[in-house]
Length: 391
Image 1 (cartoon, helix red, strand yellow):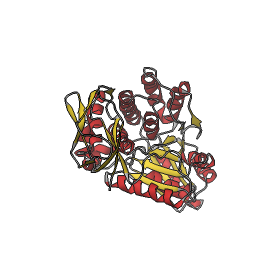
Image 2 (tube, helix red, strand yellow; image 1 turned 90 degrees about the horizontal axis):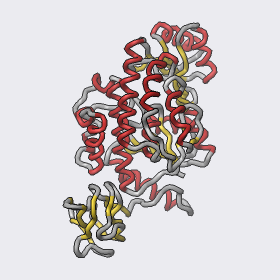
Image 3 (cartoon, rainbow, N blue to C red; image 1 turned 60 degrees about the vertical axis):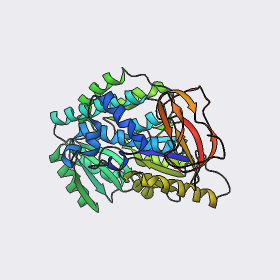
């Protein structure tokens, strides 16, 4: 079974949107810019490391990038049975599962980034990674400081992130090294996230959350707070609010997903941090990532190889290496092009029909297997129009 995972703050990179700028899924960037009233394209194409390190920029940029990747993967017909996101990535997971409308999610993420930035400006904080210690040893290192430092992320076996005020972090690092930590290092972040120091951000964010309608998720989403799957929409406002001041139980989430039968983990968004954590935490599972358009074909090929090597189909996979979907570029009334029918060969750029006055162009070369929209039907943006078999 497939689960999609979504990265959090820290995975962003300068120009991470450059390879996607000509992809059809890039249209989400314009939608995000309108929803947030910010130039999201500039964050994805032009912002330097210093600008992207700012919490108010990093979160919005990472979320939108994950949504672009998700849209591209969805156009291929690959679907998940469940979703999970690391910290900020939880908003990506909820949007992917249909619990949050995209525009609402953009506004929430933008407010979350601003709220956490303001809380960090009010109370100086930082974070550090401890490698080679058990969770219990890391907790003891925090408690022995008798100061403001807590575990913020349970990432993987022997990999914990602590957060707090700088002087207490330094003391906890010294205690951790004395206890046998293989490495202990400060992280380049702007605050002590997922600790009580984020209480001002929690209060501000909750006001924004209360203005948003949550829908029942179409697939279960695993929460950071308790590492448990939730499909009750009424639970998510409290879970998202609690997340800001509670540790991210990512290692526990991965173990729970493994116990629930998930054996294929696909990371959608910039970087490959989560894929590495899966490797450290779970054995004998399949891992894949999509961060650039080049990763799309690699994903399909890896899934197709899995199918060829196993007698049964993995739940959550619809299309593989030889099949593609052409989707509507806009919302409107669909009209089929003359001669567009099963068996017809098409080239990249061929017109399969129109939606209003906008042409539906094939992004692939291949043979039409089926037409999925009816003439005169009102279709939505990104709704599948035709199904192709590609060489």
